[in-house]
Image (tube, rainbow, N blue to C red; front, side, top):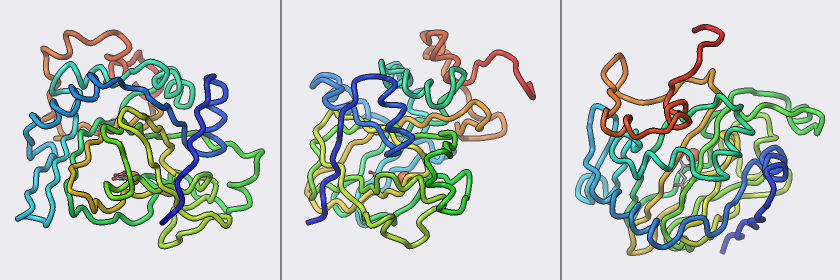
Length: 266
Ligand SMILES: O=C(O)CCC(=O)C(=O)O
Ligand SMILES: [Fe+2]
């Protein structure tokens, strides 16, 4: 059995920001209550794919396992919109990406039994550096992008935890086939439904195979520095904000969706 990742829960924003630089992730235990989990799961089940938004829904017949992934989930109903700025998580996002940060995407993702292992990867490696420089504690590269995982199941080994090498954002490169960093290999995020993990894009991680008979439900919220483009497909003027949802958005939610004050390049 692989190792279970230790998930420390830091209480202060300062400690959380520090962990983001040191470990590359922050854990929020027991973040959602049962009702919130139920609502999110049910809303995910009701989502229908919009092909031109790169959404997909594939059956067991089509790819060997069931999978549904829906982009721009905030644009589907207000429930998802409100996951742009959940308390404490948004404080951390703003602390690491800046007070003018925005969301670069939100994906509702269901993966059924038979989902295969992913390869260890960095979601994005914005800066390649020699390892001794990337790992020098005096060097603090900005957190350019991050992903928040809202786990909506009790995640055990059969369901397929996210595998993670803590601290691997300090390698200065994507893994490209490597499975170890500084003597450490991947460890599994075994957690409870309602737990949340936010991690920076350079951390080496992967989704693992679903050997259970259950479908895994995951909501991903992606954040980035304002200078990093948002990814709301379809592109070239075809993505439209849902006016009914936009009308309910708070000023902070509107900013997270891209309603910025003018700055460089604007
Ligand atoms: O499924 C997971 O737990 C992680 C997925 C992932 O890392 C990805 O799709 O980039
Ligand atoms: Fe990933």
